[in-house]
Each structure stands twice: as C-alpha cells, then as structure tokens.
Length: 285
Image 1: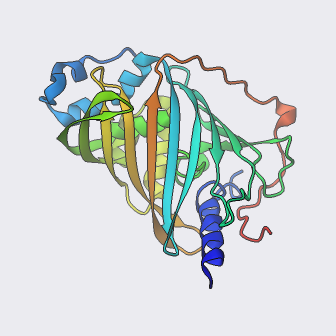
Image 2: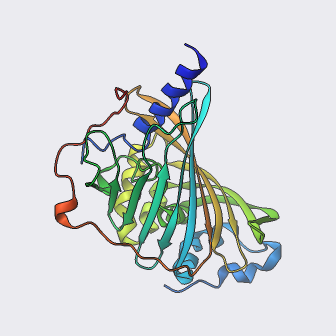
C-alpha cells in the first residue's frame, strides 16, 4: 500500500470511528473555589476540577475550537471544529472539518453540528443524507455519549467529565492564548462523572462509561484565575466497531472570548432526515 492509499484509508477510518460510527444503529453560579487557590495552585486540585463546569456556567458563553486526533495505520489524523457555546442553555454550534486527502483536497464538505441537551444535529452528514437535511441523534443512545462520535467533544460535556476526577496534581503556571493559566494533570472516571453530572448530561456520560474500552479518562486541563477552562485535553479509549479493537482518541478543546453572543437556531421538524443513516462511509469513492 503506497502512502497516498494509507492516508486515505486512515482518513476514512476516522470518519467511521468518529463522526459516522454508531449513527446507523440508533439513528449555578461560578464557584469561588478556584480563585481561593490564587496563582500558585495551592488547595485541593481534585476539588477545584470538580467545580470547573460550574465556572463555565458562571461565564455564560464562549467561543470554542476543537481538535480530535486518532492514530491509525501509522498516520495521525485530526478532525477540527470551531464555533460558539452557551453553557447556561447547553446550546452550541460547531463547524467540523474532516481531514484532507493527500493532494490537499477535502473529501467531505464541512459538517455543521448543533449541540443541545440530549441531542446532536448534523448537516452535510453525507452517507446518503440529502444536503439540505439535518440528522438528529439522541446522545444517550450513542455508545460514547457523543464525546467522540461527532468528531468534536461537546465542550460542556467535556467539563462535566472533570466532575469524575479521582486523582489530579498541579503542574505549574503557563499561558494559553496569552492568558495566564494553571495547569493540572489527572484522571477522571466516567462512572463517577455520570453520578455527579447535571441532569441533562448524566445519561450521555453513563452511556460513555459503558461504551468506552475503559471508564478512565486521563486529562490535562488549564484554568484561568476565575477557574474557567481555557484548554482541556482528554484521552479516550474507544472501541472500533468495525475491527473490535480499542483505539486511542485524543480530544482537545480550547475556550476563549467568554461572553461571546451565541445564536443557535434548531432545525424545523420537516428539515430533519427521517431515513436510516449509513453507519460507514468507507465505500465512498
């Protein structure tokens, strides 16, 4: 197999394992705990990270950039997203871009994703869905709770995973996007996170706890002086439904421009595709 064929196969595997996998089967106020640490990171890191999702709710909204990486066939392929998120209403919109082929040409139009409590909407989904139609998926029916399937981790769900933090250590100070932050490293447990999460995230995290190869989620997180997440990198062990093998997936979320306006318009019922969704696009030309 030449390098071009290897890269193309890797890109398709990411689509099948990430955005496309599983869709065919079932189609508070900001806590003061972080500021108490000050710039030195003193205090209990585990308790601080348990409150990170509350700090985002206190912030209201932000812009977000996401990257999901998976190593397959000796090649690391990255799916990128960018958009906005309202943490109080649990509404967000991302434009997700799939990897280019070896010639630099995109094999798929950017996918628009709407993140809502309990559901993911996708447009330009491909795999037989008309271009003007949306796909609606109940996140609790996905084996990963939409932490991986959409090709971008829901920013608030990612923060809620930190409620399951079991061990964490303060690493030191650094900067993210020009902002001074405190760096923590630790491991969260999805079962514990599901038990502590807000009601509209609980079912999705419970599904992920059962569907991933392991409930343990290693992470690196960077908090600003108000306890808000500026960068979060989580590593999931996802089961490839086609090869029945565990695949390591790294999801990175960057949050910035807190307070940015967020306007999310949900699809009308007649704009939602009612048909069966193909679970694999590996046969596409």
